[in-house]
Image (tube, rainbow, N blue to C red; front, side, top):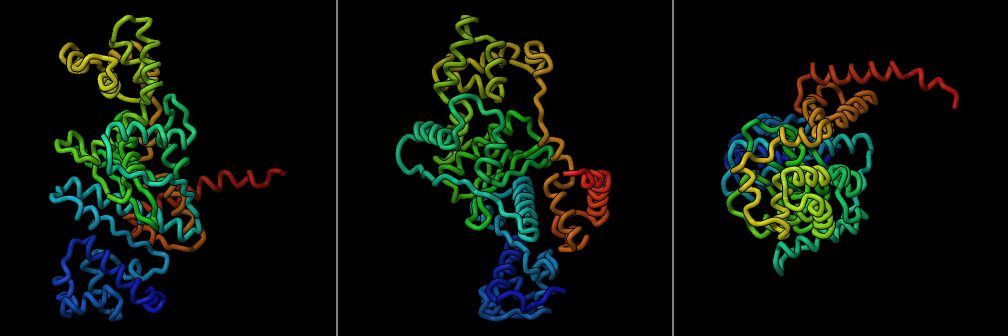
Length: 396
């Protein structure tokens, strides 16, 4: 069992408060669990009154957290769940599922990095804010600023996920949510943890690309506020309208997108299905997003996309006829999302086990897996390492 004296009373109290809030248990109910008054529980959570080990055991059992996880020195206790809960007046099961998953992914990622001594590089531009002016114009301006700051140039972005993870150092997770989930993405920022994005890997690649650009807008414009991106959201706040416009402008800059469209239309003479398919493929976006962006920029008549929808649409079959094998884009995040945990987290789990920094039981608890699953991941990587040990014998 972890040593109660390794952490300060304030740190233990903070961890207990976060665990309670993540479990959606009120202070009054938590106080009853250990037979104290609410003011006493408040004192414990503030670190004024040091908690007893028996109290930690009782609270941990009701919060769904082990004593080891509460007291382990390297453990990370992330309070995203209550933060999102306060953001939203209503929370359905789908939203709660996504937020809990997001919280668990960040916790496991950060704790593993701490245990292994991995330093994540951050390359964050200043937060811009959007208190004044027209949000659409502001988003267009900010999207160009960020592209220039990153040195991306005016053309299509080949891999926005690499831009987010490698160029900016944002934590990006692409995991499958329930098949009926309307959640497209989540964004959160914490001074200690940094910026984090979760994308619903059940969605097609073009939609995830658009969701990623949308969340990037929240990062650049208003990163202090957590955000839930839902499909077909009816009410759009100023922040949401900004993020939507930022996403479009970041992926399809007005000047270069207009130039690319003009080059194609110069040949076709009109806006055709084939033109939309080719332009969407060039900019790694959906055909719908491509058509609506053309309408927004005044390059196509308002209602063009609706007309196509009412006249046979622009389907995957149409795209295959034009693009052939190019229609199927590589999507490694899909296969990674089908694993119990990501490849990166698997490697960190194996490294922590190999160095005897964490036991299989501790890994199972942190990663929300069964011990058999953890053992399977470790055994697979062990076998792969044995197969490549001969490389070490090669002369330098």
